[in-house]
Length: 218
Image (tube, rainbow, N blue to C red; front, top):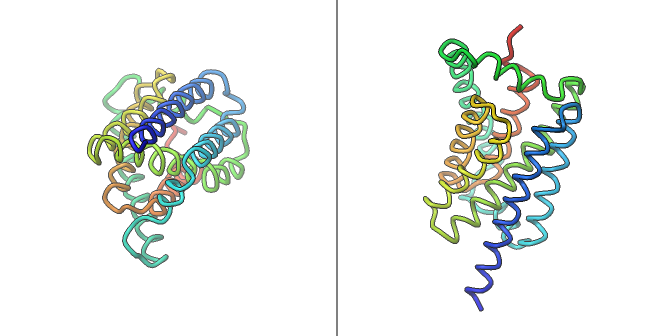
């Protein structure tokens, strides 16, 4: 009975990851003008499905971690976001300087949903996309895979899945960036055990790199 329940949960997890692949493929290939709204809806749908199929586990994910004060959680989240932004600033310079296609691929990322007002993009990233992606990819996928295969294997598989949903873009620079982000946040979650630190980190980093201090040319 216990094994059947575990197998059923893994099947749900695999199914939702496949759904994520389909949603992100549509997002990157066909949702250009509505990119940010479709992204927010997709992430919200994935989170809702994860909560429905595994409510107790999702609640546990939001409670796990050693006791920390809210200020400590905020500082760790903001500090990790700043660190990752710095990594991307260096990566931006390297990609534009070393790869003949780097500049075009980076700028192409910023053209998606370019007509959406910046305040709307920032709001979606801070309130839905950043928190939602952490809730789904780390709080659900990585946690479920770690329970089934072990912490190290679960982390690696989660990073591969998070990177994989970006393959549809055909944008090497973006895929590499997704791999870096996936590895960073998966390691952060594994190390701290706090989904809240990840949520703050992801939300602030995304708003910074896409709205507040973007890295496109010009």
